[in-house]
Length: 537
Image (cartoon, rainbow, N blue to C red; front, top):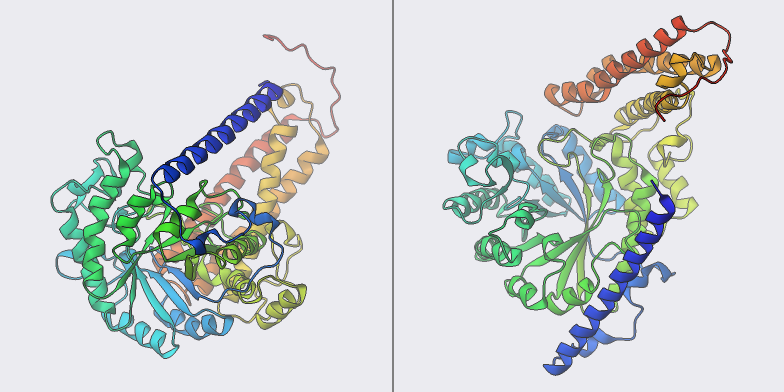
């Protein structure tokens, strides 16, 4: 590939996009002037544009609600563990919860098919809600009502309601029966929580099929047609609806007001390390014109890749700092930020593997809440949090900082330290195997093996690392069964072992076999044969 040509082409494309955005902004300004539309004076205070939030040097501490997101789908911790966590969350600075039950909620009647066999009982949910109330935490249930409805639409009973026939991701807003089903699901959630809640999160994110449906133009009309009756149903019960914002980011203000007029408070989510250019041009201005109150959402875990196990804490901390930059800017505008949800995703969707289990992710949560409290994160705070969690040294921020001779598997004293230790050992084993994966195309590719141009040193190192990783992973299998039983049911534990350990052992064996074949076919001294003639060039 001609990388120089590609680079120049991308630069040209970037310039074209910037020019189009500038022209678009000029057109919007002219339209407003022609219609004599002027924004409220409070919205045009002389402030730094949000496009340049990276230039904000002084960050405000966060003063709104701080909700810890519990993503329970397919990874429901035992209730006894959750109950112990609630006072811990509060002591770290959390003021509420955003609870996503999905298939762990005890649905009944026609909806009983939706609950998994490891779903919580009514008694357990009641006990949980009472403890949430005792801890004076705001309770916000989250129920998906449009996209991410796999846990509903996977069942034959409801498969005819799919937006795309062979996909269970989104419900079809145009099919009779869709809206009554969603309202029934929402109704059961509200009935269980009615005495404890004043907000309900109705999901509404990532409805990808709207962008691919030829008969769904404009997508905003279809979205409103489906969501507004659901929203009205929630509002009728004196509950304020919260809605993920991503489907609305490019909407016109008039369309946004169709949502805001119902009392909806959007939750603007963004999980990258840096948010400087993450959102569409003009989005914050449109939101400030349409919504008097919004929420924002960061991530303390489960936001980097779908199969990771060790939280890259440094990225999560930077994500919260980036949100504080935006929050510090919005504080001078007309829109009120009601709160922030620190999301902690357990799966990317219903079918995905587990990522970054909750017990091992608590150090990240503690530090992220500290960022919101301080407006930054000092070395002193890092040391203080590390000590509170029982670490003998500073919390490990990145997986590549895990010491190769890791010994303290069970370090710490927080509720989950044993799982955290397991994840450290697992990540160390992964590091060893990944280093071998990178060596294979560099030192053991097809040409090198055919011509016997093999580095015995690299071969020896690779086999040693495979052996070390295999030993660690084999030992972990028994340890996981013992330690995870405190926090999770057997099904979830066995799934974690299968996906995280057995799959890696299989790959380790494949690489070992390949390298052993090379070793057996290669003299035990490094070969320096003449470079062969390469045919077919």
